[in-house]
Length: 212
Image (cartoon, rainbow, N blue to C red; front, side):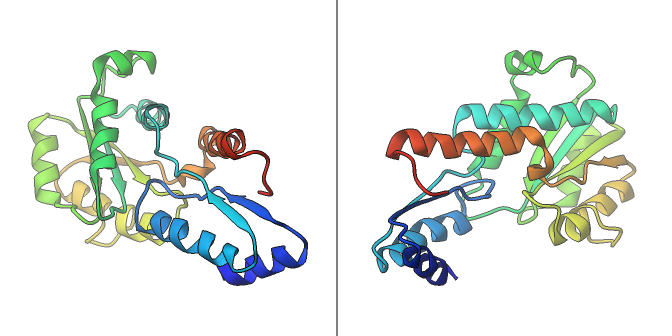
């Protein structure tokens, strides 16, 4: 698909392209894109640059953390559970949780005093008993569950928010928690789309104006 696109662009006389990926973090998909797209483009004499994923700078983490905590406020939750897909290196998820736990940073986001616990986990490492025990220890009842997915696809509908017994939602409810779900894909948030555009502009600033 990448070679076909590059061939079509080359036929139109395009010599440089910049691609802004819609990935959450620098995982396997983003790494493959960075490896294969420039190579495919070079076959047709095109210079290609790939942008950074949603979570790249400290400001990126702060903005996404803010959106998640604001959603928890809307649902009047006393705990926030964010679930991502997971990748080879899950440190970005841990970093996001750390950002949301910082008291100084949290005060910027408004009144979130009702949030007694914050958990950021992945489907790869989901262990319902461990997470439930952590939430029960915090003595919370009402949970806001947020899928950390760029689009609300199968993982959101089935693995996280589904009614099947194996879903994250079902596991939390079985443990006695009341669960409210923010089912939106992250790209449905205007703030996220604006942030991706800022990433795109950042590459323009670094490399000059490309075809997007």
